Length: 447
Image (tube, rainbow, N blue to C red; front, side, top):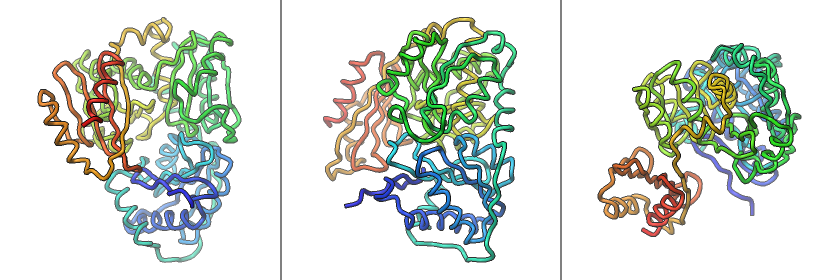
């Protein structure tokens, strides 16, 4: 029996040759083309992929569907996801389709969809697309659209990245850097960026062929061998990307995994001293961001989980920076998409300014411990669980931005939310110690 595709407001992911079929993609892209027509978004569609083996075939399917409905396609082939947003604005495109399964295993592939504003579809547009998909909506066919190859797609993105900081200060440091692209799309821009920053470069997984050398998600467990390579090559830092290069994890010179939460925190530490302003995180991100913002008299705002939700609050609050604790910084100076390359520039700029190893710089930020767990809902309504949790922890303030978030006066927090793709509850707790966070999650899931 085929597995179920994962379809949500964030996009589509499924297993190649199983639930990810040409028919599924036709139905989904047809709904996207219908939505663009309904919202009067004219102009070409950017199409690109992250390097997975199946990506080229899926791009051909997407081209056929879009051109059948009269849409012109600008085909970029392999391109990092954050570059997609830059290219949309550069080409005054109506939107974009990025063929990627992000950090999912290699047997998966999928689609991320973007609007003319250069960002992933927000919750409202995503919900509208899902409705059109379920209704089997298709636009009116007309004259066939064209296909044009996009070349030199990195030029504008690279220029925006180099404008973020004083490049010469990084160049003088001649950092020795290990870049782990894991055979995803990151090398396409990551290598020229680090060369422009004057770094001595060691690259792992340079060729974007989707043949992952280790599991795709940049977690501590998956990056142990990469940490050993950082030490073996005597590098100052290891920079590890996920396959579509919108997330970045860091490894210090001793081979220690700093964690994806530190990517966002270290970017904020670099930026807020030089350009103070409000910041936005999602409600599952470490409170390190609060500490860093408050230290310079700025406000840290929270959104529901999801890149699109972070961007919504950034725009509403006119925030100068944002992101998610999964290693995804969002810098409006470059674009409104999570961007590992922003993380690379800002972390190296921080090291150049402080003239200290990244391990020592990270140690200056107050340390917290996040623990994550899950439990089956077993037919219970999530709101029933939330009500019991509020009664169980009356001393905590309740926030229903995304599921239920309980906040204690000492800064500890617990987030419990229903999964968008499985009949489970996810629990995330952050306290001063791993054991306390683990115990808090257990108490919640026992309820």
